[in-house]
Structure formats: C-alpha cells, structure tokens
Length: 81
Picture 1: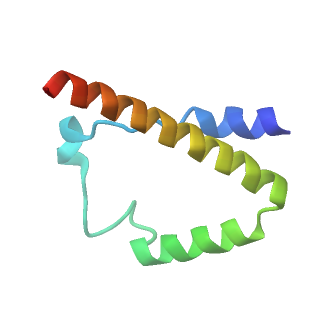
Picture 2 (picture 1 turned 135 degrees about the vertical axis):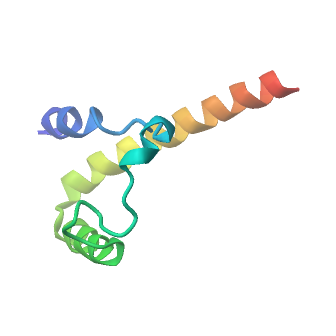
C-alpha cells in the first residue's frame, strides 16, 4: 500500500517551471470550477479523513522534499559565494 501511494503521488511532486506557460494562466478562474478558498477547504476535509498510515506516507514524502530543498539551497549558496 505504501508503494502504491508513493507511486501515484511521487510522479507529480516536483516543482514545475511555469514561466513559459504564462499565457495559459487565468487568475479569475481555477479551471473554471473552484476557487482557492474552496480548494483549501476540500483539502482540509480530505486530510482529516486520511488514516494514520496514509498520513505517515505523506509525512515521509514531505520530509524527503524538505531534505531535497535544503540540499539544493546549499548547492545554490555554495555557487553564489
């Protein structure tokens, strides 16, 4: 189950460069269906309904992401010195 969750989510966790797609941005409608506040509320309900195991997988992925961010920042700081 852990592998399945990580496989499904792991493919979409990297930051994307959206500068080249600025012409596609529409700040008035998020895909025309839901606003930012409503999205946050739905995410909150989903998070609260997750079981402890699923939360542990998400927390592991968050820890890995933080470690990756810190590593990249250290590389960036080392280059800019």
